[in-house]
Image (cartoon, rainbow, N blue to C red; front, side):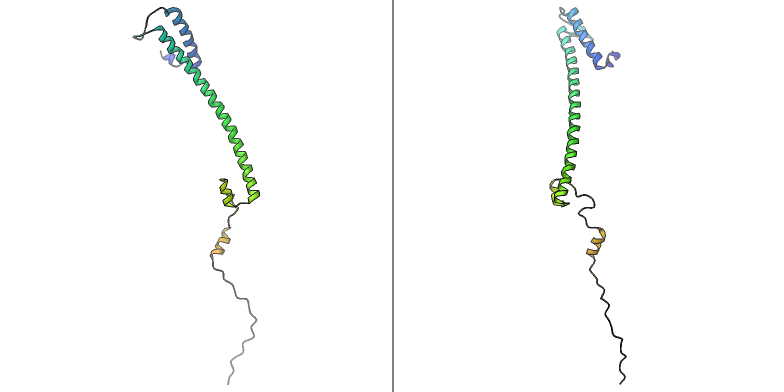
Length: 146
């Protein structure tokens, strides 16, 4: 029985089809057949083998549908990515890097855009200090000696 467990699907299905024909040919008139200690009606054997064939066919169809869905999904994803890139370029060209507008489209502000450089931030946080302009001073006159 181990050899039968290792059959690939096409081989198993071919054997099930042949076995169905054999059951019909040789056991159709029997009321029951004993298989591994259990009594089986020939119609039940046929139905079980037919179900194995149908289930194998169903898995093939499901696999083909899945592959088709994956292919379709990849194509629609590629189109969506291209459209989003073009849309972001349009929004940036039309509205600039305004975070609110970009956020409405779920786009991030491009790095380096819309941000204040660190030096400007530091300068803004530091109180402005001005150096007094050099004033022309007359030479100091020594105190008068009176």
